[in-house]
Length: 488
Image (tube, rainbow, N blue to C red):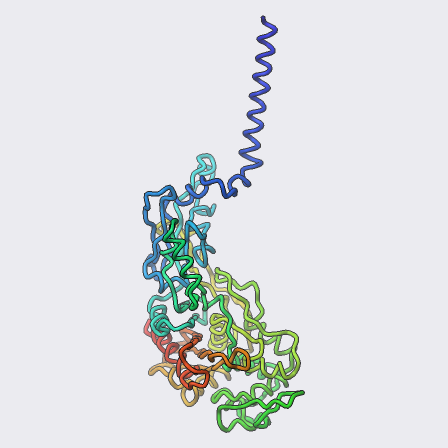
Protein backbone atom coordinates (compact mmCIF):
# COMPACT_ATOMS: atom_id res chain seq x y z
CA UNK A 1 0.00 0.00 0.00
CA UNK A 2 2.82 2.44 0.93
CA UNK A 3 4.60 1.61 -2.33
CA UNK A 4 1.46 2.44 -4.31
CA UNK A 5 1.07 5.73 -2.49
CA UNK A 6 4.70 6.61 -3.23
CA UNK A 7 4.22 5.82 -6.90
CA UNK A 8 1.03 7.90 -7.05
CA UNK A 9 2.79 10.78 -5.30
CA UNK A 10 5.70 10.58 -7.73
CA UNK A 11 3.30 10.59 -10.68
CA UNK A 12 1.49 13.60 -9.26
CA UNK A 13 4.78 15.43 -8.81
CA UNK A 14 5.73 14.58 -12.40
CA UNK A 15 2.39 15.86 -13.68
CA UNK A 16 2.74 19.02 -11.58
CA UNK A 17 6.23 19.62 -13.01
CA UNK A 18 4.85 19.12 -16.53
CA UNK A 19 2.11 21.64 -15.84
CA UNK A 20 4.66 24.16 -14.53
CA UNK A 21 6.88 23.66 -17.57
CA UNK A 22 3.93 24.07 -19.93
CA UNK A 23 2.76 27.19 -18.07
CA UNK A 24 6.26 28.65 -18.35
CA UNK A 25 6.30 27.85 -22.08
CA UNK A 26 2.97 29.59 -22.61
CA UNK A 27 3.85 32.56 -20.37
CA UNK A 28 7.40 33.13 -21.67
CA UNK A 29 8.19 31.32 -24.91
CA UNK A 30 4.83 31.55 -26.70
CA UNK A 31 3.57 34.80 -25.14
CA UNK A 32 4.52 36.97 -28.08
CA UNK A 33 2.90 34.80 -30.75
CA UNK A 34 -0.24 34.32 -28.66
CA UNK A 35 -0.55 38.07 -28.03
CA UNK A 36 -0.24 38.71 -31.73
CA UNK A 37 -2.67 36.02 -32.79
CA UNK A 38 -5.68 37.63 -34.53
CA UNK A 39 -7.96 35.19 -32.73
CA UNK A 40 -6.84 36.51 -29.34
CA UNK A 41 -9.42 39.14 -28.36
CA UNK A 42 -7.88 39.88 -24.99
CA UNK A 43 -5.30 42.26 -26.49
CA UNK A 44 -7.97 44.28 -28.28
CA UNK A 45 -10.22 44.27 -25.22
CA UNK A 46 -7.35 45.57 -23.07
CA UNK A 47 -6.38 48.14 -25.72
CA UNK A 48 -9.85 49.66 -25.87
CA UNK A 49 -10.72 49.07 -22.24
CA UNK A 50 -9.41 52.48 -21.22
CA UNK A 51 -9.75 55.92 -22.86
CA UNK A 52 -7.06 56.70 -25.40
CA UNK A 53 -4.73 59.67 -24.80
CA UNK A 54 -5.47 62.88 -26.66
CA UNK A 55 -3.91 64.83 -29.52
CA UNK A 56 -3.66 68.55 -28.81
CA UNK A 57 -3.51 71.63 -31.02
CA UNK A 58 -2.42 74.85 -29.30
CA UNK A 59 -3.06 73.20 -25.93
CA UNK A 60 -6.64 72.12 -26.74
CA UNK A 61 -7.71 68.58 -27.42
CA UNK A 62 -8.96 67.74 -30.89
CA UNK A 63 -9.65 64.12 -30.01
CA UNK A 64 -11.57 62.30 -27.29
CA UNK A 65 -12.95 58.90 -26.23
CA UNK A 66 -16.56 57.72 -26.02
CA UNK A 67 -17.79 54.84 -23.87
CA UNK A 68 -19.66 52.64 -26.37
CA UNK A 69 -20.78 50.08 -23.78
CA UNK A 70 -19.50 47.31 -26.09
CA UNK A 71 -16.82 44.71 -25.51
CA UNK A 72 -14.30 47.05 -27.16
CA UNK A 73 -15.37 49.76 -24.81
CA UNK A 74 -13.87 53.12 -25.80
CA UNK A 75 -14.18 54.53 -29.32
CA UNK A 76 -12.23 57.50 -30.67
CA UNK A 77 -13.98 60.84 -31.23
CA UNK A 78 -12.74 63.88 -33.15
CA UNK A 79 -13.47 67.57 -32.73
CA UNK A 80 -13.45 69.37 -36.10
CA UNK A 81 -12.52 66.07 -37.68
CA UNK A 82 -12.19 67.16 -41.34
CA UNK A 83 -10.06 70.18 -40.40
CA UNK A 84 -7.47 68.15 -38.51
CA UNK A 85 -7.75 64.76 -40.25
CA UNK A 86 -4.50 65.33 -42.26
CA UNK A 87 -2.75 65.75 -38.91
CA UNK A 88 -4.40 63.22 -36.60
CA UNK A 89 -5.31 60.47 -39.08
CA UNK A 90 -7.77 57.97 -37.63
CA UNK A 91 -7.80 55.39 -34.84
CA UNK A 92 -10.23 52.63 -35.76
CA UNK A 93 -11.11 49.46 -33.90
CA UNK A 94 -11.65 47.89 -37.33
CA UNK A 95 -9.01 49.42 -39.61
CA UNK A 96 -6.14 50.36 -37.30
CA UNK A 97 -4.36 53.70 -37.10
CA UNK A 98 -2.81 56.29 -39.44
CA UNK A 99 -0.66 59.45 -39.28
CA UNK A 100 -0.10 60.83 -35.74
CA UNK A 101 -2.55 58.29 -34.31
CA UNK A 102 -0.22 55.63 -35.70
CA UNK A 103 3.20 57.24 -35.23
CA UNK A 104 2.46 58.07 -31.58
CA UNK A 105 0.31 55.02 -30.84
CA UNK A 106 2.59 53.67 -28.05
CA UNK A 107 2.06 56.91 -26.09
CA UNK A 108 -1.63 57.36 -26.91
CA UNK A 109 -2.47 53.75 -26.05
CA UNK A 110 -0.40 53.69 -22.85
CA UNK A 111 2.10 51.09 -24.11
CA UNK A 112 5.15 53.37 -24.08
CA UNK A 113 7.47 52.27 -21.23
CA UNK A 114 8.34 55.91 -20.53
CA UNK A 115 4.78 56.49 -19.31
CA UNK A 116 5.40 54.21 -16.36
CA UNK A 117 6.47 56.21 -13.32
CA UNK A 118 7.03 52.89 -11.50
CA UNK A 119 7.95 50.36 -14.22
CA UNK A 120 8.58 47.45 -11.81
CA UNK A 121 5.11 47.77 -10.28
CA UNK A 122 3.44 47.77 -13.69
CA UNK A 123 5.44 44.67 -14.67
CA UNK A 124 4.31 42.83 -11.55
CA UNK A 125 0.68 43.89 -11.86
CA UNK A 126 0.68 43.51 -15.66
CA UNK A 127 -1.20 46.79 -15.68
CA UNK A 128 -1.04 49.54 -18.26
CA UNK A 129 -0.72 53.26 -17.43
CA UNK A 130 -3.26 55.68 -18.83
CA UNK A 131 -2.65 56.77 -22.39
CA UNK A 132 -0.48 59.85 -22.75
CA UNK A 133 -1.13 63.05 -24.70
CA UNK A 134 0.53 64.33 -27.88
CA UNK A 135 0.97 68.08 -28.40
CA UNK A 136 1.34 69.13 -32.03
CA UNK A 137 2.97 72.20 -33.59
CA UNK A 138 -0.13 73.16 -35.60
CA UNK A 139 -1.40 76.74 -35.35
CA UNK A 140 -5.25 76.71 -35.48
CA UNK A 141 -5.66 80.05 -37.29
CA UNK A 142 -3.28 78.98 -40.05
CA UNK A 143 -4.90 75.58 -40.34
CA UNK A 144 -8.33 77.17 -40.70
CA UNK A 145 -7.06 79.70 -43.26
CA UNK A 146 -5.61 76.93 -45.41
CA UNK A 147 -8.71 74.76 -45.12
CA UNK A 148 -11.03 77.64 -45.95
CA UNK A 149 -8.82 78.78 -48.81
CA UNK A 150 -8.96 75.43 -50.54
CA UNK A 151 -12.72 75.40 -50.08
CA UNK A 152 -13.16 71.71 -50.80
CA UNK A 153 -11.12 71.80 -54.02
CA UNK A 154 -8.57 69.05 -54.46
CA UNK A 155 -5.22 70.24 -53.22
CA UNK A 156 -3.03 70.72 -50.18
CA UNK A 157 -1.21 73.28 -48.06
CA UNK A 158 1.93 72.85 -45.96
CA UNK A 159 3.41 75.62 -43.81
CA UNK A 160 6.66 75.58 -41.84
CA UNK A 161 8.46 77.87 -39.42
CA UNK A 162 11.82 78.32 -41.21
CA UNK A 163 13.88 78.92 -38.07
CA UNK A 164 12.75 75.74 -36.31
CA UNK A 165 11.13 73.33 -38.79
CA UNK A 166 7.83 73.31 -36.88
CA UNK A 167 4.90 72.32 -39.10
CA UNK A 168 2.40 75.14 -38.61
CA UNK A 169 -0.33 73.97 -40.99
CA UNK A 170 -0.98 70.74 -42.84
CA UNK A 171 -4.18 70.59 -44.87
CA UNK A 172 -5.41 68.15 -47.49
CA UNK A 173 -8.63 68.73 -49.41
CA UNK A 174 -11.22 67.37 -49.74
CA UNK A 175 -11.10 65.92 -46.26
CA UNK A 176 -13.24 63.54 -44.18
CA UNK A 177 -14.37 62.94 -40.61
CA UNK A 178 -12.15 60.23 -39.09
CA UNK A 179 -14.77 59.63 -36.38
CA UNK A 180 -16.94 57.62 -38.81
CA UNK A 181 -14.25 54.91 -38.82
CA UNK A 182 -13.71 54.68 -35.05
CA UNK A 183 -15.84 51.71 -34.00
CA UNK A 184 -17.01 48.42 -35.44
CA UNK A 185 -20.06 47.20 -37.26
CA UNK A 186 -21.96 47.75 -40.46
CA UNK A 187 -21.90 51.57 -40.40
CA UNK A 188 -18.12 51.69 -40.07
CA UNK A 189 -17.63 49.24 -42.94
CA UNK A 190 -20.05 51.22 -45.08
CA UNK A 191 -18.17 54.46 -44.35
CA UNK A 192 -14.86 52.79 -45.18
CA UNK A 193 -16.18 51.52 -48.50
CA UNK A 194 -17.69 54.91 -49.36
CA UNK A 195 -14.52 56.85 -48.59
CA UNK A 196 -12.30 54.46 -50.53
CA UNK A 197 -14.62 54.47 -53.54
CA UNK A 198 -14.81 58.27 -53.75
CA UNK A 199 -13.08 59.65 -56.87
CA UNK A 200 -11.83 62.63 -54.83
CA UNK A 201 -9.86 60.33 -52.46
CA UNK A 202 -10.62 62.20 -49.23
CA UNK A 203 -8.45 59.88 -47.12
CA UNK A 204 -5.36 60.58 -49.24
CA UNK A 205 -3.10 62.98 -47.38
CA UNK A 206 -2.09 65.14 -50.32
CA UNK A 207 0.21 67.29 -48.18
CA UNK A 208 2.71 64.53 -47.36
CA UNK A 209 1.68 61.40 -49.26
CA UNK A 210 0.97 62.71 -52.78
CA UNK A 211 3.64 63.93 -55.18
CA UNK A 212 2.92 66.36 -58.02
CA UNK A 213 4.99 67.80 -60.85
CA UNK A 214 6.09 71.08 -59.23
CA UNK A 215 6.34 73.03 -62.49
CA UNK A 216 7.88 76.47 -62.29
CA UNK A 217 7.94 76.47 -58.48
CA UNK A 218 10.92 74.12 -58.86
CA UNK A 219 12.89 76.87 -60.61
CA UNK A 220 13.98 78.14 -57.18
CA UNK A 221 15.92 74.89 -56.72
CA UNK A 222 17.52 75.25 -60.16
CA UNK A 223 18.39 78.88 -59.43
CA UNK A 224 20.06 77.85 -56.16
CA UNK A 225 22.08 75.19 -58.00
CA UNK A 226 23.13 77.71 -60.66
CA UNK A 227 24.37 80.21 -58.07
CA UNK A 228 26.07 77.68 -55.78
CA UNK A 229 27.84 75.98 -58.70
CA UNK A 230 29.09 79.26 -60.17
CA UNK A 231 27.23 78.78 -63.45
CA UNK A 232 25.60 82.14 -62.66
CA UNK A 233 27.69 84.79 -60.90
CA UNK A 234 25.52 87.84 -61.61
CA UNK A 235 21.75 87.42 -61.33
CA UNK A 236 21.17 90.51 -63.48
CA UNK A 237 23.52 89.52 -66.31
CA UNK A 238 21.99 88.18 -69.57
CA UNK A 239 21.95 84.39 -69.54
CA UNK A 240 22.56 84.07 -73.27
CA UNK A 241 19.60 81.74 -73.81
CA UNK A 242 17.80 82.06 -77.15
CA UNK A 243 14.02 82.18 -77.44
CA UNK A 244 12.80 79.79 -78.71
CA UNK A 245 15.11 77.31 -77.00
CA UNK A 246 15.56 73.92 -78.67
CA UNK A 247 15.95 71.03 -76.23
CA UNK A 248 19.44 69.46 -76.57
CA UNK A 249 19.62 66.58 -79.05
CA UNK A 250 16.08 67.18 -80.30
CA UNK A 251 14.13 69.40 -82.67
CA UNK A 252 11.62 70.31 -79.94
CA UNK A 253 11.31 73.97 -79.05
CA UNK A 254 10.53 74.85 -75.46
CA UNK A 255 7.87 77.57 -75.32
CA UNK A 256 7.67 80.57 -73.01
CA UNK A 257 4.39 82.09 -71.89
CA UNK A 258 6.15 85.19 -70.56
CA UNK A 259 7.49 87.93 -72.85
CA UNK A 260 11.08 89.11 -72.95
CA UNK A 261 12.68 85.78 -71.99
CA UNK A 262 15.17 85.74 -74.86
CA UNK A 263 18.66 86.27 -73.42
CA UNK A 264 17.02 87.22 -70.11
CA UNK A 265 18.84 87.27 -66.77
CA UNK A 266 18.27 84.84 -63.93
CA UNK A 267 16.52 87.62 -62.00
CA UNK A 268 14.07 88.22 -64.85
CA UNK A 269 13.58 84.47 -65.34
CA UNK A 270 12.51 84.03 -61.71
CA UNK A 271 10.39 87.17 -61.72
CA UNK A 272 8.43 86.23 -64.85
CA UNK A 273 9.00 82.44 -64.83
CA UNK A 274 10.97 81.96 -68.08
CA UNK A 275 11.14 78.30 -69.08
CA UNK A 276 13.91 78.76 -71.64
CA UNK A 277 16.45 80.36 -69.31
CA UNK A 278 15.91 77.89 -66.46
CA UNK A 279 15.96 74.82 -68.73
CA UNK A 280 19.24 75.95 -70.30
CA UNK A 281 20.71 76.59 -66.85
CA UNK A 282 19.81 73.05 -65.81
CA UNK A 283 21.78 71.65 -68.75
CA UNK A 284 24.75 73.92 -68.03
CA UNK A 285 24.76 72.95 -64.36
CA UNK A 286 24.89 69.29 -65.36
CA UNK A 287 23.20 66.18 -64.01
CA UNK A 288 25.63 65.41 -61.21
CA UNK A 289 25.54 68.89 -59.72
CA UNK A 290 21.76 69.11 -60.13
CA UNK A 291 21.29 65.80 -58.30
CA UNK A 292 23.58 66.98 -55.50
CA UNK A 293 21.66 70.25 -55.25
CA UNK A 294 18.18 68.73 -55.11
CA UNK A 295 19.25 66.19 -52.50
CA UNK A 296 20.27 69.03 -50.20
CA UNK A 297 16.66 70.23 -50.30
CA UNK A 298 15.35 66.74 -49.43
CA UNK A 299 14.48 65.27 -52.82
CA UNK A 300 14.93 61.47 -53.06
CA UNK A 301 14.98 61.17 -49.24
CA UNK A 302 13.10 57.98 -48.38
CA UNK A 303 13.60 58.34 -44.64
CA UNK A 304 11.80 61.63 -43.95
CA UNK A 305 9.42 61.45 -40.97
CA UNK A 306 7.53 64.22 -39.17
CA UNK A 307 6.89 61.70 -37.34
CA UNK A 308 4.44 60.28 -39.93
CA UNK A 309 6.06 58.87 -43.05
CA UNK A 310 6.47 61.35 -45.92
CA UNK A 311 6.40 60.14 -49.52
CA UNK A 312 9.80 60.78 -51.16
CA UNK A 313 9.93 63.58 -53.71
CA UNK A 314 11.60 62.52 -56.95
CA UNK A 315 14.35 63.89 -59.15
CA UNK A 316 15.80 61.33 -61.55
CA UNK A 317 19.49 60.51 -61.18
CA UNK A 318 19.91 59.24 -64.76
CA UNK A 319 18.68 61.44 -67.63
CA UNK A 320 19.55 62.63 -71.11
CA UNK A 321 20.29 66.36 -71.56
CA UNK A 322 16.83 67.12 -72.97
CA UNK A 323 15.21 65.33 -70.00
CA UNK A 324 17.45 67.27 -67.63
CA UNK A 325 16.32 70.53 -69.23
CA UNK A 326 12.68 69.64 -68.60
CA UNK A 327 13.43 68.42 -65.08
CA UNK A 328 15.09 71.75 -64.27
CA UNK A 329 11.74 73.49 -64.80
CA UNK A 330 9.81 70.96 -62.73
CA UNK A 331 8.63 68.76 -65.58
CA UNK A 332 9.54 65.30 -66.97
CA UNK A 333 9.65 62.91 -63.94
CA UNK A 334 10.27 65.54 -61.27
CA UNK A 335 7.63 65.25 -58.54
CA UNK A 336 7.28 66.76 -55.08
CA UNK A 337 4.98 66.73 -52.08
CA UNK A 338 3.63 70.07 -50.86
CA UNK A 339 5.69 69.58 -47.69
CA UNK A 340 8.83 69.24 -49.81
CA UNK A 341 8.09 72.47 -51.66
CA UNK A 342 7.45 74.22 -48.34
CA UNK A 343 10.92 73.02 -47.36
CA UNK A 344 12.33 74.64 -50.51
CA UNK A 345 10.78 77.96 -49.53
CA UNK A 346 11.89 77.53 -45.90
CA UNK A 347 15.48 76.95 -47.01
CA UNK A 348 15.50 80.28 -48.85
CA UNK A 349 13.83 82.09 -45.93
CA UNK A 350 16.14 80.41 -43.42
CA UNK A 351 19.35 81.69 -44.98
CA UNK A 352 20.15 78.41 -46.73
CA UNK A 353 19.96 76.14 -43.70
CA UNK A 354 17.03 73.75 -43.67
CA UNK A 355 15.71 72.52 -40.33
CA UNK A 356 14.26 69.06 -39.76
CA UNK A 357 10.47 69.43 -40.12
CA UNK A 358 8.45 68.11 -37.19
CA UNK A 359 4.78 67.94 -36.27
CA UNK A 360 4.89 66.74 -32.64
CA UNK A 361 6.14 69.24 -30.05
CA UNK A 362 6.11 66.88 -27.07
CA UNK A 363 4.40 63.87 -25.53
CA UNK A 364 3.25 63.83 -21.92
CA UNK A 365 1.55 61.66 -19.35
CA UNK A 366 -2.24 62.06 -19.20
CA UNK A 367 -3.22 65.70 -18.64
CA UNK A 368 0.33 66.97 -19.20
CA UNK A 369 1.42 65.95 -15.72
CA UNK A 370 4.87 64.81 -16.86
CA UNK A 371 6.81 65.24 -20.09
CA UNK A 372 7.67 61.93 -21.72
CA UNK A 373 9.52 63.21 -24.78
CA UNK A 374 10.33 66.62 -26.24
CA UNK A 375 11.21 67.45 -29.86
CA UNK A 376 14.16 69.78 -30.28
CA UNK A 377 15.19 71.86 -33.27
CA UNK A 378 17.62 69.92 -35.45
CA UNK A 379 19.45 70.82 -38.66
CA UNK A 380 18.35 68.80 -41.68
CA UNK A 381 20.65 69.89 -44.48
CA UNK A 382 22.49 72.95 -45.76
CA UNK A 383 20.41 73.48 -48.88
CA UNK A 384 22.51 76.36 -50.24
CA UNK A 385 25.07 78.93 -49.19
CA UNK A 386 23.87 81.94 -47.15
CA UNK A 387 24.82 84.31 -49.99
CA UNK A 388 22.75 82.30 -52.48
CA UNK A 389 19.80 82.34 -50.08
CA UNK A 390 20.06 86.14 -49.75
CA UNK A 391 20.03 86.56 -53.52
CA UNK A 392 17.05 84.23 -53.92
CA UNK A 393 15.19 86.10 -51.20
CA UNK A 394 15.53 89.28 -53.24
CA UNK A 395 14.42 87.53 -56.43
CA UNK A 396 11.37 85.99 -54.75
CA UNK A 397 10.42 89.36 -53.26
CA UNK A 398 10.68 90.91 -56.73
CA UNK A 399 8.38 88.20 -58.09
CA UNK A 400 5.71 89.28 -55.59
CA UNK A 401 6.22 93.03 -55.74
CA UNK A 402 6.40 93.21 -59.54
CA UNK A 403 5.91 89.79 -61.07
CA UNK A 404 3.73 86.71 -61.26
CA UNK A 405 3.11 86.47 -57.49
CA UNK A 406 1.46 89.85 -56.94
CA UNK A 407 -1.65 88.35 -55.30
CA UNK A 408 0.45 87.14 -52.35
CA UNK A 409 1.52 90.63 -51.25
CA UNK A 410 0.74 91.57 -47.63
CA UNK A 411 0.80 95.13 -46.33
CA UNK A 412 3.28 95.58 -43.51
CA UNK A 413 5.34 92.52 -44.46
CA UNK A 414 8.04 91.41 -46.87
CA UNK A 415 6.78 88.49 -48.95
CA UNK A 416 8.77 86.35 -51.34
CA UNK A 417 7.10 83.89 -53.70
CA UNK A 418 7.26 81.78 -56.82
CA UNK A 419 4.38 80.64 -58.97
CA UNK A 420 4.06 77.37 -60.82
CA UNK A 421 1.62 75.91 -63.31
CA UNK A 422 2.48 72.24 -63.80
CA UNK A 423 1.28 70.47 -66.92
CA UNK A 424 0.82 66.72 -66.68
CA UNK A 425 -0.78 63.72 -68.35
CA UNK A 426 -0.22 62.31 -71.87
CA UNK A 427 0.76 65.17 -74.12
CA UNK A 428 0.16 67.58 -71.20
CA UNK A 429 -3.56 66.99 -71.69
CA UNK A 430 -4.33 66.78 -67.96
CA UNK A 431 -5.67 69.69 -65.96
CA UNK A 432 -2.69 71.83 -64.81
CA UNK A 433 -1.74 71.95 -61.15
CA UNK A 434 -1.48 75.45 -59.69
CA UNK A 435 1.48 75.94 -57.32
CA UNK A 436 2.67 78.77 -55.14
CA UNK A 437 5.59 78.65 -52.70
CA UNK A 438 6.33 81.63 -50.49
CA UNK A 439 7.61 83.05 -47.22
CA UNK A 440 6.71 86.12 -45.19
CA UNK A 441 8.52 88.36 -42.71
CA UNK A 442 6.79 91.10 -40.74
CA UNK A 443 8.31 94.56 -41.07
CA UNK A 444 10.76 95.01 -38.23
CA UNK A 445 10.98 91.29 -37.46
CA UNK A 446 14.36 89.62 -37.21
CA UNK A 447 13.50 86.66 -39.42
CA UNK A 448 10.74 85.22 -41.61
CA UNK A 449 7.79 83.81 -39.67
CA UNK A 450 6.51 81.23 -42.12
CA UNK A 451 7.17 79.38 -45.36
CA UNK A 452 4.22 78.01 -47.32
CA UNK A 453 3.53 75.72 -50.25
CA UNK A 454 0.11 75.48 -51.89
CA UNK A 455 -1.01 73.17 -54.69
CA UNK A 456 -4.48 73.26 -56.23
CA UNK A 457 -5.92 70.65 -58.55
CA UNK A 458 -8.76 72.48 -60.28
CA UNK A 459 -10.68 69.68 -61.98
CA UNK A 460 -13.44 72.02 -63.15
CA UNK A 461 -11.20 74.23 -65.26
CA UNK A 462 -10.02 73.54 -68.78
CA UNK A 463 -6.32 72.91 -69.32
CA UNK A 464 -6.03 76.26 -71.16
CA UNK A 465 -7.97 78.20 -68.52
CA UNK A 466 -5.86 81.06 -67.20
CA UNK A 467 -7.50 80.69 -63.78
CA UNK A 468 -5.45 77.55 -63.23
CA UNK A 469 -2.20 79.27 -62.36
CA UNK A 470 -0.04 79.59 -59.33
CA UNK A 471 -0.59 83.34 -59.24
CA UNK A 472 -4.36 83.12 -59.69
CA UNK A 473 -5.45 80.00 -57.79
CA UNK A 474 -2.73 79.24 -55.24
CA UNK A 475 -1.21 82.59 -54.28
CA UNK A 476 -4.36 83.97 -52.55
CA UNK A 477 -4.48 80.85 -50.35
CA UNK A 478 -0.82 81.24 -49.43
CA UNK A 479 -1.46 84.88 -48.65
CA UNK A 480 -4.24 84.06 -46.16
CA UNK A 481 -2.07 81.45 -44.42
CA UNK A 482 0.89 83.84 -44.19
CA UNK A 483 -1.35 86.62 -42.92
CA UNK A 484 -2.58 84.32 -40.14
CA UNK A 485 1.00 83.54 -39.19
CA UNK A 486 1.94 87.22 -39.09
CA UNK A 487 -1.06 88.08 -36.91
CA UNK A 488 0.12 85.53 -34.39
